[in-house]
Every structure is written in C-alpha cells, then in structure tokens.
Length: 330
Image 1 (spheres, one colour):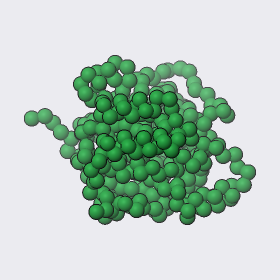
Image 2 (spheres, one colour):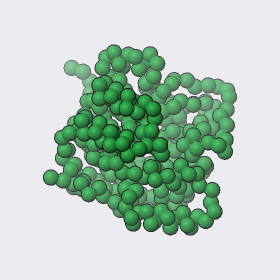
Image 3 (cartoon, helix red, strand yellow):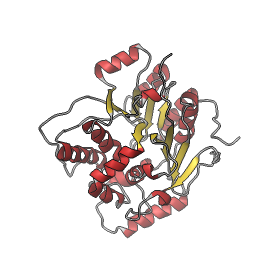
Image 4 (cartoon, helix red, strand yellow):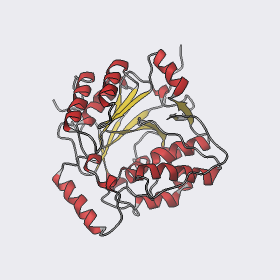
C-alpha cells in the first residue's frame, strides 16, 4: 500500500469586491489621507480589485479536485460574496488578524498575506489561494508537501548563486521591486542569491515557519504592514517565503519548467499554466488549459484586459466547472 500524508491541510483565500461602494469610498478616503505620497499607478488600478466571480469557480475546482482540504478560510474586510453560503467557510476579517502596528484599512494583498498564519484555528499546513487560482485536475497533499511536512515550492528554475547581487530601480513596478527586495534580504542573511520566478499557484506553507520568517525579517515585515497600498519598500510573502525556505532547507524546490515540464506533460500532470488578460496569446492559453487540464492554472486580470476577454475567461471557467459547489447558496 502506498504511503499517504495524514496531517490536515487547510485552504486560505483572500478576496475583495472592488465594486462595493462602501469599500470604494474607504479607498478614496485612504488616498486622500496620504496626500502627496508617491503611489505607483499599478497599486491603485481598478483591475487589481475587480471581482470577476473567480472565487465561485475556484471553490468549485477545490471541491472537485481537492476534497481532502480540511477547512476553508475566507479573509476579507467586512465583505461576503452574495452567492456564498457563509456557513461553509470560516470568515476572517482583516482587522481581527492584524497586529497593532499594521495600517488599517489596507488595500494591498501584502500585509494581508503576511498575517494569515495568525488565524487561531488554522492548520499547521495550509495552502494560500488568491481567488483566481484554479485546480484543473485531481491533486493530492503530496503535490504540495513532502511526507515529512516540508512545503514543495513550485519554481520556474532551480539555481542558487554564491555571488552577484540584484539591484532595485525606480522604474520597477512594486511587484518587480518586491521580488528583488526578497532576493536581497535572503542574500544578506544567508549568502545565497535566489532569483527564481515563482508560479502563480496555491502556495504551500506552514504556520511555524512563517512565525520564524517574522523573527528573521521583522523590520521589513513591519514596514510592509504599515503600507496601506503597494509600495516600492514592501516585501511579499509569496516571494520571500520560498527563498527563505530554500535557503534554510525547510522547503524543497519543485521545478515546473524545462525538462520537468516536458515530463509533466508526458504523464498528463502539467503542474501549471498561466495567462494574463490582454496578452496576445490569451485565447490560445485558454484553449490549452481546456485541453491539458493542468494541476493548477491562473487567468490573471490586467489593465489591458477587455470586457470581451473577461467574458471569454468566465466561459472557460463555466466550461470546466459547470456544477455548483456546496459553498454556494441553493
């Protein structure tokens, strides 16, 4: 008999409805209070907060392909999707989990994701989902964790260098700057430089190691917690955590590109496919997702997206996940 992981695994979703008029007024008030602060346009773009009903389809995919998930948490700021049966998830409010030094309200995913481990009843092992992360075929706990509990970190390359140093540039977006800053932090602490790109997929984490991460990078984390909008000075846990885990050997690399990707395709277990609305190959990527059924996939909204592309995205979701889940009101 094959060995199976017995420890429980939870799923944590972060979600916002950027069309909510109460939320939009709070966002405007926060921007007014910051006066002439230098905020990157990408940090306040409406597309960053759009709700295209992705959460509904992500939960359908979770129920269909990962029924072993013990409990689902939904982290919001006093918002609930109108279609959601809120008895099927554990609702977590931002303010309940933020430490006293954190900014509130917050309009950046970075402080929110840095505080997920503070959910009291959360399992030691958990998956961090954005609402646009989907599962495309049956997955097992073993796809995300080793038997000894170490998270598997899905990376686009597998290299660590002993020399060299990434540099920050004022022309960088907050997203690109956060990745460089994560590289610098881990390099300064451990002497290893990681510059992997990371798949936009459900991140496997353990609470205990996130607590240790906080102790190691407390100054950078506190600065990020105090940023109500994405900032050039931020770090993002979805980048610094994998680099830290690799450097400390508390996690293991799971490459998803090159020869590994070819092998995954041959065995019908393509790990990940991603596409951004507005890209020239968006429709092609949708067709590939429908054909290959990758383990995980993400159709990421963008400032270049058109309404037609958003309709095509929903059509793709509906084709793959037509049946309502028990998370939806009847």
